[in-house]
Each structure stands twice: as C-alpha cells, then as structure tokens.
Length: 334
Ligand SMILES: NC(=O)c1ccc[n+]([C@@H]2O[C@H](COP(=O)([O-])OP(=O)(O)OC[C@H]3O[C@@H](n4cnc5c(N)ncnc54)[C@H](OP(=O)(O)O)[C@@H]3O)[C@@H](O)[C@H]2O)c1
Image (cartoon, rainbow, N blue to C red; front, side, top):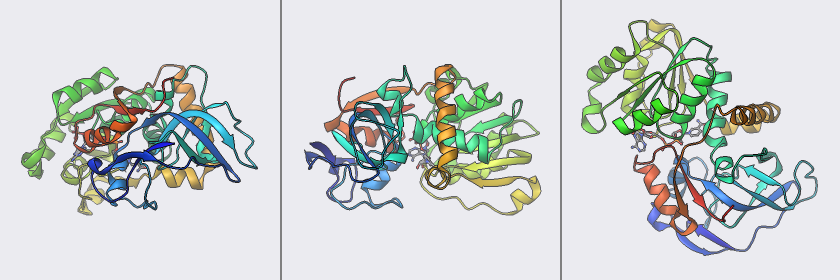
C-alpha cells in the first residue's frame, strides 16, 4: 500500500510517498481502508521527534482518519468489515490503510461524511471533554477562546455556544476572527503576533478591554507561550483556565500569585489519556458529539483538501499558522 512516510526526523519536506506492507489485524485490532485523514498540529511535532509519542521509523503521520473497515482481529465485536468508521490511530493515518485498536474505532453515524468523521475527535472530542468535565462551562457564562480559528479554537467556539455560553474569539488576523464570528462567537478581536506580542502589559490590557472588568469565566487556551499570562489576567473570580496546548511554541510559566489573587483554577486537559483511562466516558462523549452533529450544532470547517502525496504541504500550513479550521488529506474519493 502507499503511505506518506517519515524515514528521518525533520519538517514536512522530509515526508516521502512510498510503499509499505499492508497492515494485518491482530487480536483486538481493526484495519481501516482510509478515505480521509484529518491534519493536526501534533503531526508536525511527531515527524520532527518533538512529541511525547516516538513511533519507530518509517511511519506515516496522521492521528485521525475515517474510512471503511477491511478486516477485524479476534475479539472485535462492535465493528465489522464494510462498516464506515472514524478512528484515532495516533499515527499511520496518511496511508491507504491503517491498523487501530478496536476501542479507538467508532461507527460513523448516518449522514456524516468521511472528511467530517476524520476531523471530529482530536478537536471536538478534546474540547467537549475540556468544556464539560474540566471547565464545567455553564449556560450564561463567558468564555475567551485563543487561536479561535484553529482546529481546537473553532470547536471551542461552536461547543461553547452550544452550551449556552457567550464566546469571545481571539486570533491573530481579522480573517480568523471573522471565521470565528461566523461560527457563533458573540464578539472577537485580533491580538498581535511576532515581537509585538511580547509586550505583556499591552497584551494584558487588550485582553481586559475585550473581556470586561469582571473577566471571563472560562479561558480555552490551545496557544500558550506569550499569550497565556496576559489572558489569565482577564479571568473572573472563580474562573477556570483550560490548558490545552502550546501551538505558539514555548510552554508558559505563570506567576502563582495570579490564581491566588483571582481565586481561579488552572486545569490541564489531556484528551488522549482521558480516552484511555475512561473508555466508558469516551463512548458517551462520542455519542453526545454525534448528537450535536445531527442537530447541526457542530460542523468541522474543512478549508482545504490535499492529495496523499501532498500531505506534507498540509502539515506545513498548520505548523506555519496559516490554516483556517481543518485541513484534510483525501486518500480515496467517497
Ligand atoms: N491537550 C489535548 O488533549 C490536545 C488535543 C488536541 C490538540 N492539542 C494541542 O492544541 C494545540 C492546537 O491544536 P489545533 O489542532 O487547534 O492546531 P491549529 O489548528 O494549528 O490551531 C492552533 C492555533 O494556534 C495559533 N498559533 C499561535 N502561534 C502559532 C504558531 N507559531 N504556529 C502555529 N499556530 C500558532 C494559531 O492561531 P492564531 O494565529 O490566531 O494565534 C492557530 O490557529 C496544539 O498544541 C495541539 O498539540 C492538545
């Protein structure tokens, strides 16, 4: 089978379309013929050996896919060959077929396309868990979303609105803010990028100006770096700051007097570990997401599609801060 392979650590330009033996389903495994593979920020980190996951080379990046089951191993009962599924292999998705543990594979609901199936779990799954379990976001509360036009960001805008919250979208360009407003944010603003973003005081002032004197109840932060501390300064008394990722690069260090003064919580979100540790919860959350999708409350915004051979270009767009919403590698036509 064809796969887009990382044979040495490096950037997206190091990926090469090559042949790999087709995967074989062992006990508890499902083999999926991939139709669509969602592109995610960690794809760029994994191929550069900058992620906690270090798969043996050569491997194909691609953490989430949708397609059709071609084989199941002994012990697999909830899906069968021929089923349309979404799956979270972690890596290996940018290939004609991928093997996943059965627990990471879910039947697609009626009416969900492969590209929506391949762009649901890493972002909406993470944010649904983040807002419900970690953030306990309530109707009528306010939420600031950083990187609001990214994968996590847009999912937070839509899911925040679906929970009845007032969502304030923050992003680095007017085009990105406009996209978030179109997806349900109540208000939005542009924050600086580059050197200008290093002025903590000015950035904190900007966040305060848009979050109001009382601050926001929840902050959803997949960006980190220089944005984290200024954003935290705009949190409300009793607020919840959700640490989701560090797309801007550095892991921020926050002065501990801030949670003390604000009476707020800083809460970590690690969806992959939650999915492994609490599989029954995960199944319930997947059903809730399918229900939200059926009601039209969430809809992944797929802005560009790439052929398998061009998967590296897609990863470069995400890593280069240029992607809007989700990018998809189309491996087979629907
Ligand atoms: N904790 C978890 O369980 C979990 C699950 C999924 C993802 N994540 C993490 O969440 C983060 C975001 O993932 P995502 O899928 O939303 O990524 P994404 O679609 O690329 O969005 C990330 C956003 O970060 C902002 N950003 C700021 N500086 C950037 C830079 N130097 N390069 C790229 N983006 C930059 C961009 O928005 P602006 O330009 O508007 O600033 C961009 O839209 C990643 O770190 C990912 O690893 C964590």
